[in-house]
Image (cartoon, rainbow, N blue to C red):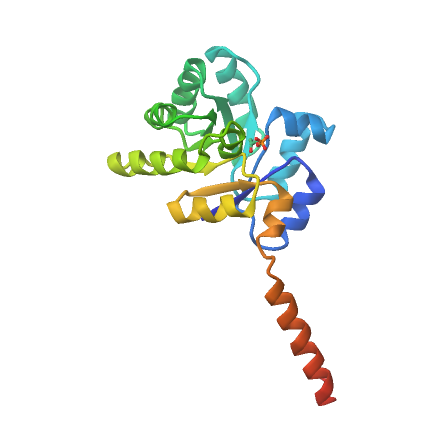
Length: 216
Ligand code: G3P
């Protein structure tokens, strides 16, 4: 399973790149606003740090505008992945940009049928938002299962990029289902390593080593 990080915070990205766990980055207009940075500048900087796909979202709502903005964003670096919303205009833009060889991430997916449309439009990634479905008392992971089944039935190459992840458990469940990618808030990625028995065991090993009086 690939791990992307869902942030536009350069320091977070640098820090997590050092762990060797990062396969890509996703951003959205809300995360760009939070960074307080100039959109294209921050995307260019992220692309220099990370080799894998870096999602940058268009803000036009019509297909022509999305295609123009997508082509412009794709010029920033070869790993820019143009993010378009799951609307008819977004699917049209996805289809055109994908045919031109641009990586496309179709975002704001909340149903299996939407994911089916995105795959047919040639999306590189489909981004179903599990946390926002859970917020409505619906089952985000059930959607991931459905999309996995549909994509496998027809051998679609579109990768399932699980988004709106809120907990470490979301990551485990998505991995069990066989999602291709999880995009994680930085704090959730850090939480994945936590286990009290690891901490306790390491503490005991260190205490016993001290008793040997040896140096390494
Ligand atoms: O990038 C999209 C997504 O991951 C948003 O997550 O927590 O705002 O629902 P959230």
